[in-house]
Image (cartoon, rainbow, N blue to C red; front, side):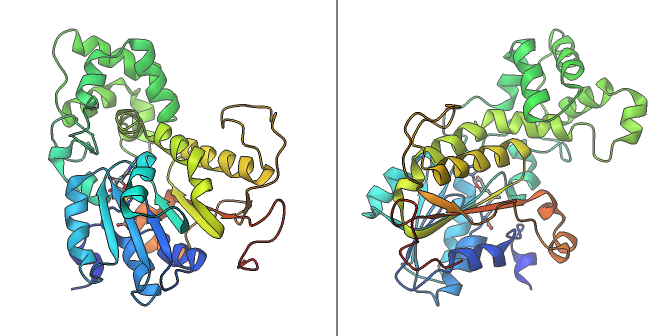
Length: 330
Ligand SMILES: C[S@@+](CC[C@H](N)C(=O)[O-])C[C@H]1O[C@@H](n2cnc3c(N)ncnc32)[C@H](O)[C@@H]1O
């Protein structure tokens, strides 16, 4: 059986990640989104099994499956059930203070989408949940859909889902929930589909609920907040020459990554949301992907999930505005 058949998730842009991170024996790498360990295993294999990894995931089920797969390299990868915004505690537990590279492969795995009970997908009926970590105390999609104020619901669907019909959909949800609690993925999908004018429904390339489900998932798991928190601090943990690679699947995520990298390349230490730099410091990193790198056509054909992927990579600089410590592995 091929790897793709054994595991319901094919790692996206794996060759590119391995090339950029160039993992070496003894090097210390962070995989902030372990999933089913596709990228971690790729890094370990490329290092001849000699790299060391700290791997994080919020999802206990993914962690358990990944741990099985990582047995191929005993003692090489330490796994932690935590959010990547909490990477410092995992590094502290591993006794690491600096990294030789890090990767984030954002969003959800095919495993999460395929399991009806997790409530991520309108393709299979399940409880309206969508929490990557059901132990975290975060509100489920059911809570958001049934309790949020109309304006907040509209904003989430419109802004996180890039859904121009956000207002119409939010209104339809509010109308239905006055009569009944919305409990399942299929009920929500039906409400959203009905809110779509028939001509838009016919013309839509995807199911009308696609954007609404993605928006809710991002809100439930505070996905943009997680990325911002991580990017605020991770650069200080990269050794000179170490690279951070981020794969995103959503324009808002990609924008956050792009802005953070620009910030680092300018040397600015001001908070990410501050528009005008007031610190005027030397660059912390250089950007290796002036434009986001996309998967090859071959990969997109083989793995349709990779189609919306965008990869951005930055490299920590050695001295202010200078070369990298390793002589610039560009
Ligand atoms: C796209 S999958 C990663 C797949 C993995 N790279 C592979 O090839 O098998 C994203 C994973 O990141 C996890 N995840 C998403 N956001 C997270 C966060 N803020 N902290 C920790 N894990 C997160 C999800 O639970 C999911 O398992």
